[in-house]
Image 1: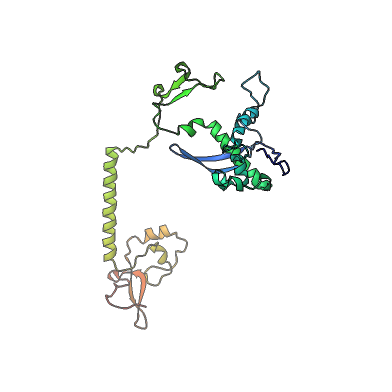
Image 2: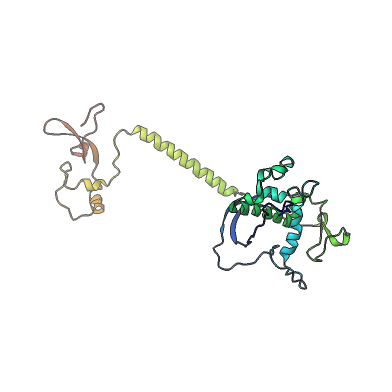
Length: 300
């Protein structure tokens, strides 16, 4: 990582093992801004494709057997150049590995502790930060230098991947984004309505509202409790009806048909002790037992 001019002191050397981990990432984007929302180690046993990184061989250069990481570290070692004029000053890498918060501090050069004082975990994490940062800068040159802009009229891209050579400012060897055309399709949900169905909807809605209003008015006018039950069932073995006993084999529907001409009321009836009860029976007006309610009378 750096050269120690004092041979009597401990030198710093690290034996690092680099490996590739396959992960599954969920990414959320808003316009150009994207960020991972969840990440986990891949649960797949086989992977669809392998990314070509600087840690792989130069598969695009058939005549070369040199591993790609050799190129990577030849460029990466430029970060180890001393920040100051003197060659024995710490590099950015050494400073970050020893004390990240003061990595770029020019006044703290001479007070940095030796790199070997960092424990294994801190050293691994900090070295990973450095490698990942350099790696992202190496593969994301355009976003790093140009940013993601909505106007590419003044942006050019030199063809490098095809020729496998350093890009040159040759107009015949570059793309101008101002001449690039694209069709962007954006799905927009548009609500349409049919005039005929809209009229039907309005009329039916008004009818429902009017019916609800009428029902509310009628409910306020009716002060006798409603019996939402099958009244014919209540006539069976009921002494308040002038019908013969029996008929237990009849269904409710058959009994109701036979009693179609009988007027039935839920009302007042006199008992033997001159008290009033609320019962269901045939009406007094037709020779029955039950009379109308008396307004203001209290019933138990």
